[in-house]
Image (cartoon, rainbow, N blue to C red; front, side):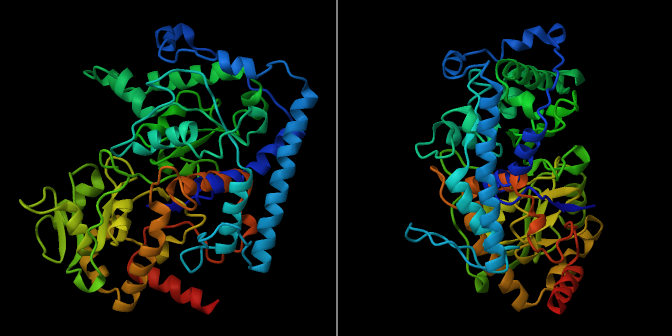
Length: 489
């Protein structure tokens, strides 16, 4: 049972950008080509779902551009990435922040960051350099749009921001200047429109989803050189749907280098922390970018721990069996009592229990942070979002699933001083889990991009991270022991 810290999770675009240096260095040394295997004879009827509308793209691209020109564009990109890496290393060594001409710009400081200087400089370099090419092939509703509300909202919000955002400074004007290439297909939309009706066991098989993604990649790989030159290593697809990891099950070789940006960051379902990116699951109310703020100050938080939700998955079933409607301090409900408000109860609680459901990710983590409630993660095999940048031990707790029966004892063992420190850190870290449109520096949208960037162009091996081991679901006593160990260093 493990909650794993992803080396790519830091702040989606920033982390993503910085790992790209390795990808481009590989391009310059060896431009290999991937031979795609077509499956049209198995699913010809599916190709129509991704209809082609690429006249504008074809006008702006010359498929047969000279090899030297391609290499020179890669070399220019690598020069920029090399400069970015050098500036980040300098910031780490000097422990100084680069001055900004913008007034009121946020500067990350404090223990919630593994290395605030590296984080700040990574964001600065991202804002200067990152360019994302969005493939133009395909038509809505399966491509170029996604849900903008409910728990899959991050799919549609990101697609709309990167494609249509008024201040989308990251969108490349030409693919030759791009650091990364975005496949703008929405898994949530595919499930909604293609998987109907769902009457038999076969109707839940992932083959149709897999074939659609493979068809799309086949099209762009045949038309442009970018996929083949890297075997997809600088391409990514973002999904918050539970089925996101399944896109690569049918043809693992095709996807073995492509980056998947997933909410369902479950290592037992093929999530690779060394390649993929974990992002938080966010439940957006209709027409809003956040739930109402009903949080109370610590002295008015009268509930020790709170959870309300259905019995989805083994961990929730165990939690409900142990605690459902049994304790006033640890309030666990499958259904809220009449007249009670879910958001208000989170705002009155010191700790909010965040158990996995059918899948490892839960929107309750972000909901808890918004409510000023310390998240208590009950999980197995989960790679926490932004873990390369944020030290989750400073603003959350993790309890092993087999110790669910000891929740009250563990939480009551947290001293008032330690709780107030975690509460204060929750308030500080909240800015990184807020969705803004247009995106703002260091918000959720930028965190995703930074995470993606650092993951792909600047492996954090050069950052001093004492005691940065894989997260595990640890008890409070184990977590305190870790802090004692830190104080000895």
